[in-house]
Image (cartoon, rainbow, N blue to C red):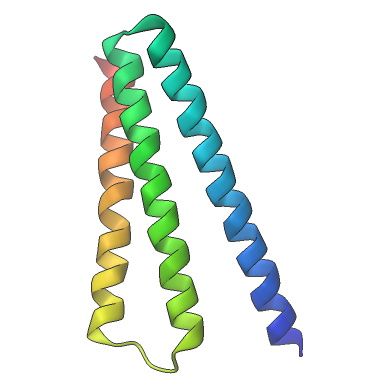
Length: 98
């Protein structure tokens, strides 16, 4: 019973995280649309990739919770979730230091 409640709480936290990341993406897009600077463009791209990474991470967690063993497919999904985060943080780095 406690594990079921913990799973629901985890899913809710991940949903909130996804909503926050989408909100940051929308805010950064609006800022880029208003000013059209190179930094804001990279910030928008960075937040967009981070949002994709959060979405893939959420999907991976749901798949892990529904299966009893880690498979090769799950490992590939974990890698697929890491790539958008890396690209996103790289783009944010470029927006801050260019």
